[in-house]
Length: 437
Ligand SMILES: NC(=O)c1ccc[n+]([C@@H]2O[C@H](COP(=O)([O-])OP(=O)(O)OC[C@H]3O[C@@H](n4cnc5c(N)ncnc54)[C@H](O)[C@@H]3O)[C@@H](O)[C@H]2O)c1
Image 1 (cartoon, protein in one colour):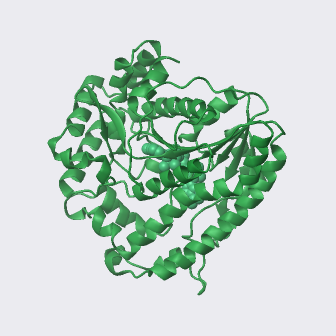
Image 2 (cartoon, helix red, strand yellow; image 1 turned 60 degrees about the vertical axis):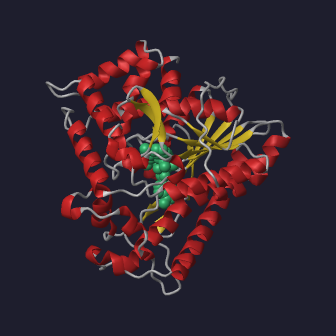
Image 3 (spheres, protein in one colour; image 1 turned 90 degrees about the vertical axis):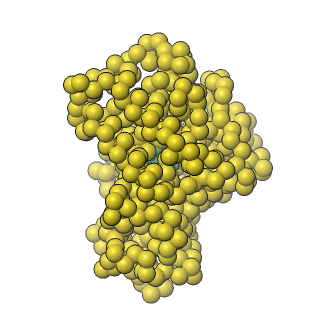
């Protein structure tokens, strides 16, 4: 698929969802993730929120539903019922024909030997097929229950939030730390890692968890979707993508991206799945969202640098009480002697650095890293994070909350009358949404 950059430029009209309509969240809700924004919107509109769980793995590796206690906690967090069938996707713990999963195979492997740890394409395909079959079987059970919970005539909004797939083996952590956080002798080029057999294992795992689950969701809910539409309701789908983001750099909105975003190929596959569904008349939209700090982005140190210019975007799009409040809260988190102006200048000097010129081409995305780029980014990230007085309560967390709130509202409203299979939500429209709220 050729990528056509399609940023959302106009605030959508408010969605018409009402009490009795249903939001189904395909993916578990955690404390500070993107999905919180749209779930809050659904609750405010009086919709019934129904959620899913990834399930849990017992000590022996068995995948199970939540216990009664875990379920009560998860439902309280969601503010809605959870259909308690484990929707873990992927195959990292899926036993192959010989009884061994990819994670088993990596037990005892030394991270230093990463380049020669063997995985064949056929083996990966075998595990992948088994994992997909398990996921689809469990998803069918979830959807059967969901069908009973959606009242006749209700509108349904399906929200896909799943992403991930780093195989759960100790082997990976030191290795990925070198790819994403390594400097000096520790630096490992993302391209070398990605082209190795363990890189190929990751790639297939990312595709399965981040992209193919969306296809499985579209297929599994076909009957519910058709029933809903036949009854006069809407049945639309939204998913969270990432494909770089426009932020203010040197005073103008410019597309940029975190590098190396190794999930990028899976995210483009997600876009393709939405485009295919769109051609069949299904309202499915992938919203490419800005970089924020969540449980899932913690490994990607430096991803948060492009979040800081949101403060400038809030001013550019009109400022006012909401912008003032966010700025005030951010300023209160800084160490004595640090200021938001210095923070913004330093973030801008990274984003505008001539060293990043080669990474600015959308058509060549996702880019692999270089040692100079990685070191510049990691150094800037550390300096900016070091300006917070409490490392556990940082400016980026405050800005992340603002972004997922704005994105949640935009996705919610856009889902009512879908516009396109792929849309980018940049800082400009998000800031405009926040200041006009
Ligand atoms: N954080 C960012 O900077 C950013 C930027 C753009 C888009 N996104 C996207 O937003 C979405 C939500 O991510 P988030 O950053 O809010 O983090 P999050 O950790 O809150 O959400 C990740 C979701 O993926 C699910 N998940 C993870 N591994 C899974 C597996 N093996 N099987 C099934 N489900 C699995 C989790 O249950 C959770 O629902 C993701 O699609 C992510 O790629 C994030």
